[in-house]
Length: 518
Image (cartoon, rainbow, N blue to C red; front, side):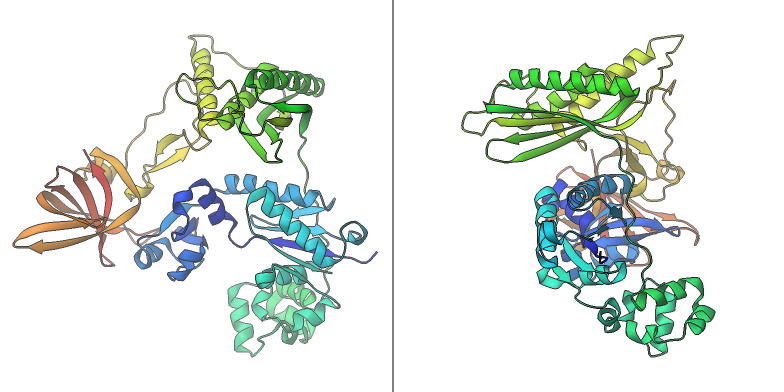
């Protein structure tokens, strides 16, 4: 059987996911950043951000000066990896061997799929269509014999979004830019200086010369350039998932009867879980309506559990939130008759771990309080969304207000006997007005400061107000190591009663509003 590799590439998976979560960010310059070598650098930018000159690898400080109106979001690897699982699940329908090559990139063994899915172009179109239907992400698909040729085909597919390499991989790669090789930037720059602008020119070099000058990494890239790829896609380990389903012969609109069905599914799942001695850390459900629309939900549990009641409650909360807007104290009883009813429910438990006993505290009833608090948090997250409730944690090592706190899991830790003291960064205690911030602007908003007839004016969001009082400027300055900070902060009171904390980067130009005060 001839070897065939399928590559699926989603160019802007992270930024698209963020705009799906925050629709208000759609159309705005959006960038994802991560800490690299003690500096925050962009790792992905949206189309709107790219149009302003932002690019991956740029420092966040430079990006904020170039595009102050942009939205800058910290990287969240666990969340993005979990969301990308939905893409891998789609590929699992086509191939038994699917490799996760990182967020936005995956490979699959496509050998022998012709009789089932048709020619390569038809297979790629089906994969792309199913991925977009499941995730809302626009994917590019490439097919070739080896991994490198398939990836290059996917990344250069253009508007067609599907590209299949016919014939020899080496002949296809020969005309591609040398930048497509998996080599570091320093090596690629040397190759360009030596006049090797294409992969074909690099493949024509003697292997001994390549190995001597560029080592093992260069030799591996040389083999790939010649179409010699000895490593087919490697299948990822699939986690155990238990699921139970029920199909209705009618359109069910009554939430109580749906809850009764969920109870039956939860009891069957709990029995299967108990036979394996496993506990569930996540509950998921798939609900299908008569019109074919499908809703998938998942909810992390505060602690591993296996009781049918816990599984049923988690699914029921999600169901109620989906049926209608859940208001305080109001229970949803019926799906409106003008909306299609439910015809299929699938309940599953994921992230299964070996069961273990719970160590209770000998003194006090903290475990009971923690359980009640986590139960309430689970219900709120199920009804309002995973991002609706969270806990803030102070970062004493931070040197800027926008990084002085971070979001952490909202659940209460059961092994914590008392609340850990939270200390503000040392410089924050001495910054006038900062401790009274009631609203932090993320990202900071650009402002214009001017003087008219001796009175200071501040223009924020198109509105100009007069400054009636001010304090500062105060300087926050760090050393050259790590991520240097060099700012002047100014606390102003406006004629409408509002207070603002302003700052400017001493190495740049322009003022920004950090937040609002009481």
